[in-house]
Length: 99
Image (cartoon, rainbow, N blue to C red; front, side, top):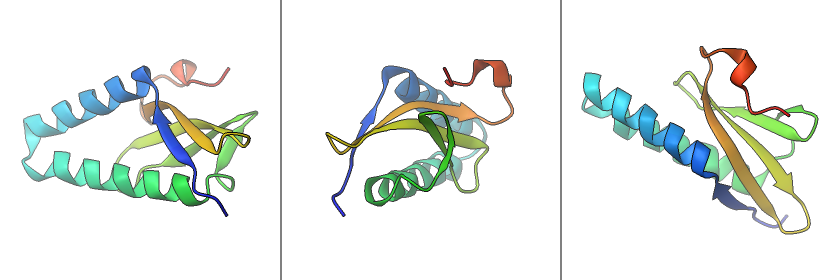
């Protein structure tokens, strides 16, 4: 199976940066652990993004040990995974990137 290239949208990148900044306020290790968990999620998406929970064409992957999920779409023709959002699971569900 071919590896998928991960493309992070500007929205997702901003949400990731906001999460890292938030965790940095409360702990030295939490931002490092969040980045590590995020990299693990990227590795999963690179190898097999198809078995994740999905809403129409948008799929989701929870980030281990953190209250965030990556919402993404897969382009099978280009072997890419586009991360649309790094959504905090406690936020208003009306703001989910599901359209």
